[in-house]
Image 1 (cartoon, rainbow, N blue to C red):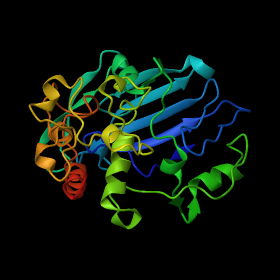
Image 2 (cartoon, helix red, strand yellow):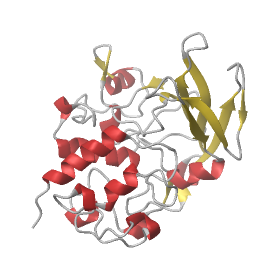
Image 3 (cartoon, rainbow, N blue to C red):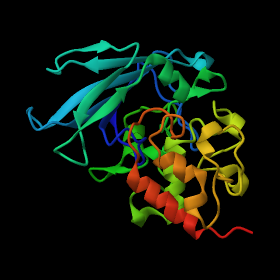
Image 4 (spheres, rainbow, N blue to C red):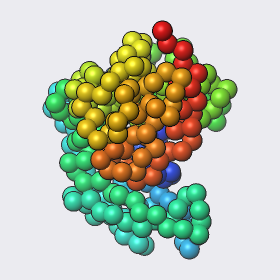
Length: 291
């Protein structure tokens, strides 16, 4: 099943195609707020491409990532594949690889793109000390219209869910579509998909005390006037993760903008900064009044 999302994780402006596969006779378990539950043997697949005017179709397939469900609390296994130059075959890339691709922002330039290693996959998908965290597979991120029909309603009709949910799917916020929400709501939507898989109470960054889940409502948990706990070099001398009204002194902005491996967030999956998202989140922080 090919699927689309409202908010995708940033990967150096790569074009990403997404699919999942279910073993015959199995179904997804719908969850209105959290990630859908997949049966044992299910596969989630993402393929990453970059522009390339020298080949037919104008896009070069670079890598494909697979998550394979071990079922229940056993979590997921991961494999990363690197495509050959002819895009006829892909081989597992256990150690990862730094490859040269066409810059999305400047057709005259090349850029480095990092294919992750298998351990990198575990670092992002870890939850409750195991790989139990498919990212972005939630009702709020999958509820969108495709060819005039809601994607989740279509899946429901096709019998993809164990129990058919009501066709009243959650309202959707798209971080780069101003028509869908306020600056704050869209900033939170981006942070939810790109940061909250680690920055949540059960994630690998829980020690930081920062929870960037879209459902978190406590201002300090989100980062307002929150001093660094385990940021190391990441705070670079700034006092708060979010300094309300002052994006230039908020170290969350510095980390999102940085490409220094010791500072940048997310620390994996990118070598460039998502400039549009940084601008949006800076705008949001600049409007915060907190007393």
